[in-house]
Length: 225
Length: 225
Picture 1 (tube, helix red, strand yellow):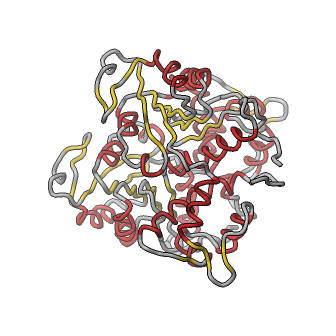
Picture 2 (cartoon, rainbow over the protein chains, first blue to last red):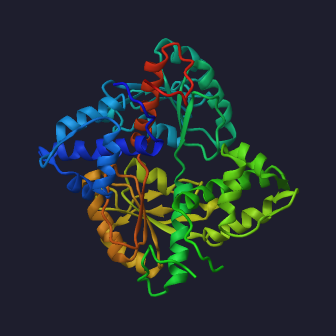
Picture 3 (cartoon, rainbow over the protein chains, first blue to last red):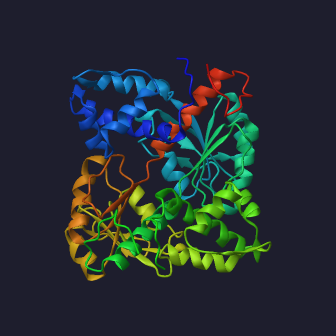
């Protein structure tokens, strides 16, 4: 599909939420859904859904809503989810091992095909159906299988070095679990997963609603001052 | 501090990134930093940093940049991080156990004080320095310790039930690791951590830059069509 306008990043970030919801609805046997119902299911407005989808064409039929399976298939196609994406994980500590053996990737389009570490005590040990390999073997593995996605699961102090190695090997998308900002060249994407950063934005609202209204009945949208 | 305007959510979400960066800089012995340098360190523009901070007052001195320790302390105060927040985890599978024993919470303002499950085989087992307890004991524990933050680490099909239980007990912020949308009343915040959703937004860009430029030298900002 040829598009005239670039799709805003915030829209791209919402598309996987639609995929997740539509897959659940499809599994529940739901055949069609209105933008209003889908919005309620996800927790956003119907107008937002219609606007987001309008970047990619016409998906709903006037007065009949969306066909769940069709819309799911189309958004998956837009997101490049018509294939399974192989991924490598660097870092085979507790977190890396949990990631490498997570069974939720495969049904949603991803598969960890290699786990790497630099600790001789870990190398050679099994993780799920994989064996932990020496990180020096990473570049060859990435090139051999044309792998584009890498997961960083090492401590913060090691993370940039690992990211550099990944990028040099040909990785173009990094999911970063290390609690630090990574620097990568243009054309490579990094997304952070740092639960503490997420928690710290929630405490802002806990503190503010507490100070605004000790009884705990504050309206979240109420203005201060 | 009394503020006239509400702080945009996107700004609140960036503050923890500043905290993380400033804590690292402080640990490295950096005393002062310009908005330009801080921006480079984090990967955003200096103008954005200045604009974000302007919601909360004056932190920099003309021509001298920010005092790292002072700015860190102030942003932590704004985010309510002058205390340690106790948290409960529900779900003691592989993920829940990894969360409960994660040593990165405590230094950054959070502590898991209870882990709960409904599986008799798990209840009574140790996780780190905690013991897995029956989920029926959750409400009493939350009330007894005035806990405001809950972490959902159960399968998607169980997640809403757990969220309802948490909210009823007095939890006001939920970090949701289950790959499904949770519905909570106004005044309760939910943040999702779903690595697949994050990965799926990255594949959009992988697919688009691939189709735009098979040689792999695409400019990320280039318009299509």
